Image (cartoon, rainbow, N blue to C red; front, top):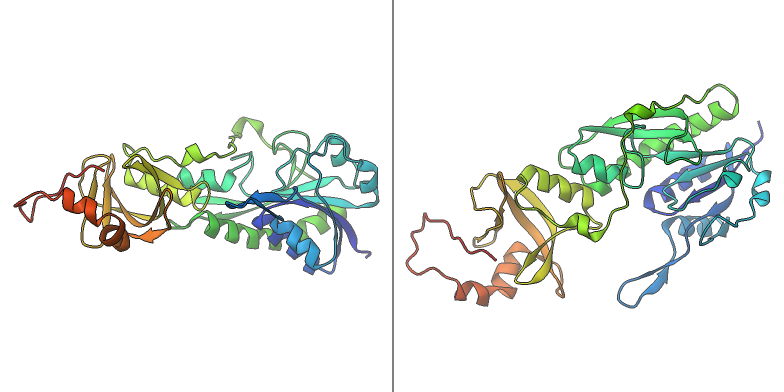
Amino acid sequence: MNKIKIIFFGTHEFAATILQGLIDNSNFEVGLVITQPDKPVGRKQELQPSAVKLIAQKYNIEIQQPQSLKTFDFKTLQTFNLGVCAQYGLIIPQSILDAPKFGIINVHTSLLPKYRGASPIQSALVNGETETGVTIMKMDVGMDTGPILSQKACSIDENETYTDLSNKLAKIANFELPEAILAYVSGKIVPQAQDNTLATYTKILTREDGKIDWSKSAEEIYNQYRGLTPWPGVWTIYNNKRVKLLKIKPDNKILEIGNWKLEIDKIFIGCGQGTIEVVELQVEGSKPTDAKSFINGHHLSFLRRNVIPDQDPGQESNNNF
């Protein structure tokens, strides 16, 4: 059997793992990679290539980085047997979907039709799901509405973050995708239509999605942290500054909603039900720090100004900052 010639569309870390898996498989030949343009990063706004571009460069694969595919010359894609898409991030028009002989298939990180859209992994974690999975589907012009080639479910552990779950799903996809491609191209798989009545949708995330509502339960806030770490991250306001909570965990202490309690080396914040312990944090304009350093260093003067004289050792501080 001749190698299946593939054009790959992808941008982020998950997609880079999928691309590597295709490159490593002797059944496939990745002849072109289309990824998003380099993006400015950091204070100096230096251009940084995508994770997918770095992999393609390593193997000397041709790379194209159009700002949009609306005017892309799809005729160059007609020499490919199949397109594979994973976390690409730009709309692919019908002319390009139809260009490869077998169209373009997508690696989606949910059990479609649940969690269509831009943030399926994050949404599953934020919503406290205990199961998700990978769907291999043939793309159409809709938002993850195309017919399904294969699905593989997996459990979500209670302390998994976005990075953990993304890595787990990438491993599953790298096992499922080659089998799905070979069966699809050989005609052994007939794509199955999705039940659109069961569809749910996710959105493109912004920084505002990370703002914590302390009236929610500690479990809900912890799930928000799991889904939105490292980006956009979860945050709150302290002393008129944004504070990013880099590592947290739920606790059973009883505190007023939104109130902070500082112990020798621990920070607790009251929730609608339960409490969150802040293990690592970063105040706007400062470097990341652990709770003990935060208390003993940056905010020692604040604590001294807010000591409650002759406080009963069993009484909880009500310092709300």
